[in-house]
Each structure stands twice: as structure tokens, then as C-alpha cells.
Image 1 (tube, rainbow, N blue to C red):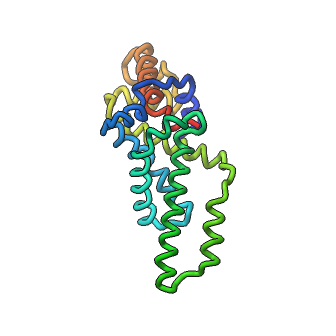
Image 2 (image 1 turned 90 degrees about the vertical axis):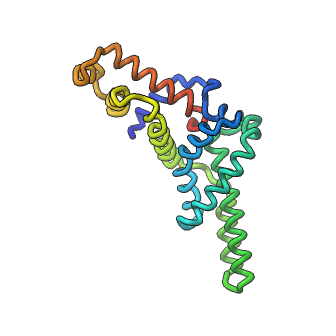
Image 3 (image 1 turned 30 degrees about the horizontal axis):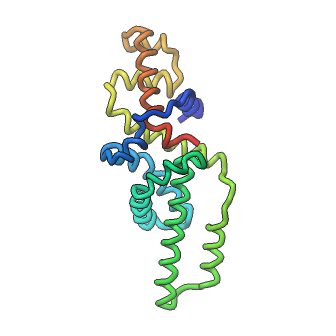
Length: 208
């Protein structure tokens, strides 16, 4: 997905009560399911970066979502200090460290681990590092792809085709209108409607 698409979606973001984050705090199950679908690939990616295996990452990911459900009210109080993505990344980091410590303790009990090597590994992971802007952008692209996959089911095939061709592929609205035998005005209306949906539902969850 092109960076220009991400910029188009984020331009003019309006945080409203229709956001998934707001609805999840009200225990809206559909909103919660969308958040899980949105962030599962990114959380898995974070867990793997800590050296966890695929199965371990899946398990820790479940722990992250359990913690997230419990901590959502806390984010409301802290949202001026950090974005949702960076806040969730910190939760994931802590869960990964908890998992690694437990894994070490179990291995140590069986006499099969190097304590010094393990402590060096933990120290490296616990050290706060400046986030790589390139990785952050990759994560945002992944999140917007997930968001689009979630949102696609809410629009007709025709409207979704219009949106993809104009916004994602960057094609001329006039040519798209001719190809799909609709008016240019309708193309712009559809484009605005889908972008508004993306902003209202996902802005709080994806933006920096």
C-alpha cells in the first residue's frame, strides 16, 4: 500500500464517538472483534521480534489482548501521553518479558539454561530504544491493510472498487466513472464516504 494512501486517510482525522476504541470501551463485542482483527498481525510481529517462536507469539498475543481489555480505561487517562499503537506495543513488550522470564525459570529448574546469557538478553529487551521510523511506517501500512479488509464487507462491491481505484491505485476519477458507468460526482461521494468511515472507526487506533 502506498504511503500516499496512508496520508490521505490520516488527513483531516476527526476523533468521534463512532470510533472502534470508544465503542470497545462500552463493551461493544463487534468493535472489540475488529480491534483484535486489526492488531493481531502487528502484535504477532512484535512478539517475533523478541525471539519468540510462532506458537509462542500466538500464545503471548492472546495474553496481550486479555491485558488490553482490562486496561482500556487506563488508556483513556493516558492518551495525551502516547498513541494507542505505542501504548499497546509497551503492553506487548511487558508480556513478552514476562513470558521469557517464566521460560527461563522453568528451564533453570531443569538445569538447562545459561543464566548469564538470559540476563543479557532480558537487559537488551528492557532497554528503551528509539523507534525506527521505517518500521513504524511499515506497521501503519499493515494496520491500514487490515482496516480495509475489515471495512470492505460494509460496502457494495461497486463502491469498494471505486474506492480502491481512486484512492489506493490513484486513478483519475473521471476514468473510473467512465469504466464503471457512473457519474464523477458519485465517485467522489463514494470516496469521501469510505475515507470518512476509515477515519472515524480506526483513527484512534492507528495514528501516531
